[in-house]
Length: 243
Image 1 (tube, rainbow, N blue to C red):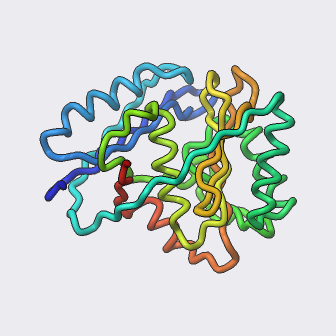
Image 2 (tube, one colour; image 1 turned 180 degrees about the horizontal axis):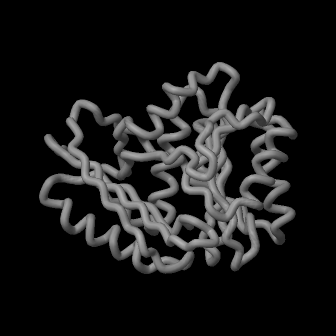
């Protein structure tokens, strides 16, 4: 168990006069002082080799974390749904989210946002009943931060490990009803829906190959305390306890 540890975060972007700042990649790790250098190298490699393009801006942030600040959470259970088409996958995702209490209108808003947004850097927070967007972050969105695994889990690839850790942190807020996500990576078509009751349900395909639209939607309850929710997502360190 780490006595003193550090949050190491990466954000990479491409800048152009036409598009402004295009999000390329991001990454999150928590490690000891001796692990900072290899983690930074790993994150730099991720930022420099990405299917969304060549980053010309890479930001690395290293922040000390007190051990007593860290929350330890078990990972959500993983299941997978494979459908014959994008339409069938969307239908399955809608069915699951409806069963969790997300309204049809909120689902329409969410699917429209993810299908049309190609430069969303963080998540969108929606009221699960009204579909109203509650954060005021625009394209920046709300980025879940300060997360990692306590121990390596060799059964999962890096992409799933990262997404599962993030989904686990989000699901463990009392304000979270559910999450819907698919990647903005053009070569990755699998997404997921999740919450504490159903776990982490991978669904494929949720978009066509080559498409760069995607992101994350957090559906929250009417009782959400928005500032507290965002502070938890962005600031509370969480380590996921592997098996």
